[in-house]
Length: 175
Image (cartoon, rainbow, N blue to C red; front, side):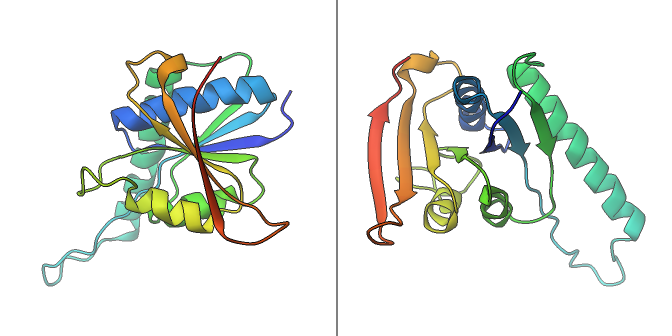
């Protein structure tokens, strides 16, 4: 059924719901599979003698896997025409998405997630992915409640034939 893979990063925000819906629509157009990624990170405990045990990591890993599956189900259901896989790797969002971009047809992320710098033109994850992803990057601007045909999209890609400078484009999705 699938020819390529479109990777989409989600974090539970409304923006990531819009990105997931846009990525599903694009996967349908390209006959591609959809790989949904929600990276997670646990910070070390600062209390003395309060180390995390191996079973604690297992519980967190299992919870993360269930959470991303539930998020996908609630956002796009179970599409019968696109192979959808979800994963919750442990690591920073930018690092895991950049790793997943290797061999992907496209990487899709929302414009702003749960970062602490609202109002920035480009979030830290978006910026890292724009500089280091190995496939075209689509940054979806807009919320999940907006119709898909009015969601703005920003494209970032590297033009490898002529030079390695980052090229930027912007368009409105027209379908």
